[in-house]
Length: 341
Ligand code: SAM
Ligand code: SF4
Image 1: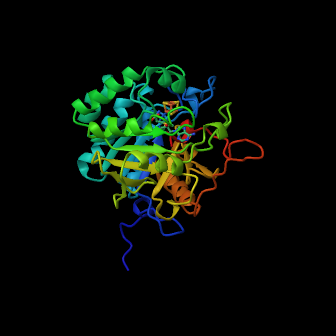
Image 2 (image 1 turned 180 degrees about the vertical axis):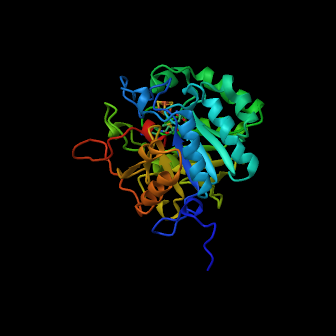
Image 3 (image 1 turned 135 degrees about the horizontal axis):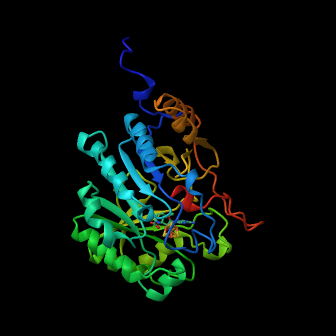
């Protein structure tokens, strides 16, 4: 067999369970202009600047993963669009779209900065994005985000669509907060040609309030929605954890992400890297690998590729989420804004 040209730097990433790693989520900042109650505490301590990977380092890191077969990159955070200079990262990564090495460059955003950046994102090859929006009610929105303005997000969604970017809405289902409104949110999103995905609250990070108070099982949400809509199981998959149903009355798609049930680990194709270069092989496990040290150790990517290989060889079979009912504590100490969901 001829192994010439098949250096580890080009070998595809396959984990011990035979799953190919083709999707990288990158948290580019831990900061945010909102403080959603389920995501962050009101007084968060953010990372010192020197710990963050520079935009050039983030580009190098993403490019190394692309060389290893990653086809989809999602930038997230914190709020990715509040990172200073973030458009230069989109601009540089778009070269991989142009070459065909990367199939999709996208982001998850709270939408607040889209009025400013939608046009540039479209110019850099971003075709679809996820925008998080839990309620259309300005007061509830302020209560959930602690200081956000819903109109700013609605303007952002309009700006993205005007720039030709398809928008999917993500909403976290919150007990006693937006549970009465989810049916209307379906009608609103589908009425504008946008898919909607509902997310169950995950036990990540100490946010200073009981998770059990926020937790609303999506099985209950689905049962309630089926009193208003005919929901039909459909085969649509995006490779992610969402299970989709078709809504007969609207003709739109509705996704459910229920991370507390082990329903998507077998087909997991993703890993996550934080803005400090820590690679998490599974959203629901603490095990992680430091990629910043090998990245900064030399200008060549050899050590980086070796560290990536070593990490992927430890990707676990599945996750371990539990809301600890006895101690009323999150099962994992890190916040969602660290890995970006
Ligand atoms: N700031 C961006 C946004 O809000 O879309 C990107 C980062 S945010 C951490 C990514 C997604 O995670 C959002 O849709 C948010 O609603 C969701 N999220 C945050 N904390 C969560 C939690 N504890 N459980 C479930 N989803 C959560
Ligand atoms: Fe910010 Fe997104 Fe977390 Fe809300 S969910 S606080 S918008 S990072």
